[in-house]
Length: 294
Length: 174
Image 1 (spheres, rainbow over the protein chains, first blue to last red):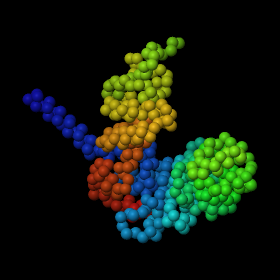
Image 2 (tube, chains in turn blue, green):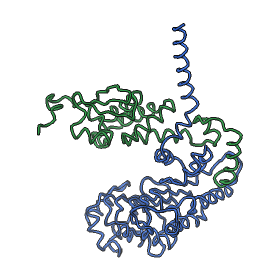
Image 3 (tube, rainbow over the protein chains, first blue to last red):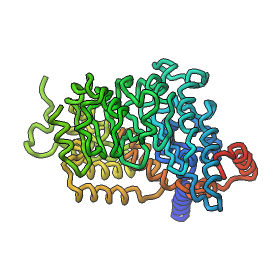
Image 4 (cartoon, rainbow over the protein chains, first blue to last red):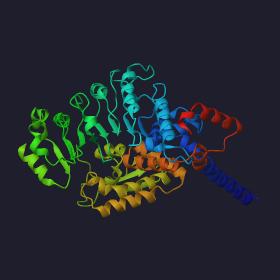
């Protein structure tokens, strides 16, 4: 009898623990602290992050307090139904509009924000607006109080924008509003890591893109796309603080024209001497010329 | 003030430290591997964990700790190289293969692991598991996620709540 009793007890215990590992996996996930769930969410795209709100009451508002957000137009492609491209883009726009109202997520409270749109999203006007509003409303959202930082500046450290159409206001807002920015990635056609890659039109916004008001920016990468215009050299001239500057697709006549451009001849040359330049192009001679003339 | 004795005597041999899990199992491991944990690194730099002392880890059970240490031992050489700029493509591919297999485990173990990695501040392991869990969620509908992640089937009330939610957040669904 004793034996049987002990046996049953063991079996019951075994059953209980098996059952708990089977059924409660979701509960175990839910039991993790917010910061771990947010870390998991940082590997997901924005729409999927929001969709987790229906998992259980524990998840209802978790998405609102993420620190990394990855909004990707491609997440809205081929959703299994026969949406036209316009419908997909409309859904993307609608989603992002809703997502970025201050009651949901304020870009200003994020550490990292990535906004990726592709060439399909030509109208693109919205994307710059989302960023501008993020800056504009960061001071007005009463719920968002970041300790130790002034309320009128973003805490954002990494900003990645792909194919985003930049208008005149963009530069002004971002450079004056993001004192903590360490990494600015702006890319037009797809390239690799930490990029500033803008086409001619995008460069010819008033004043061009200049980053000299971002003292913490240390890494930058520029895709010159084989062209050179005045605003690009002005941009390069503003990289006096970066320690790693990556230059891609140099125009063939880069070094000839470079030194006649106003922006490059200013204080920047000194800064650039301390800069590590990573050069990814076939024509190495251009780099040699650039370095020797510096 | 005498220098810590452990480690000084055995020239050449790697310094070992002892970690004690919540269920009192002792693990002896190279200090370099244990130092992948930011939390342990401080104690170890202070000379702790050697000899008969051991570092108690009241939040980590032995099953989880042995898994954590498996990761640390594998990643210690690369970490010692400062993120392994010298590592060959073969080494990196081998680590990647190890990582992929390493997280191919029961979900409840994953959650114990990520919790331990968080407590011990092992950055690489935290990200590895977080990414694995994110990958299990990717591309699935809420119902599929519930099933995959082992959430209990919703009660009728919960289902009604879910539907209301999906209506409210229609902009995030189709």
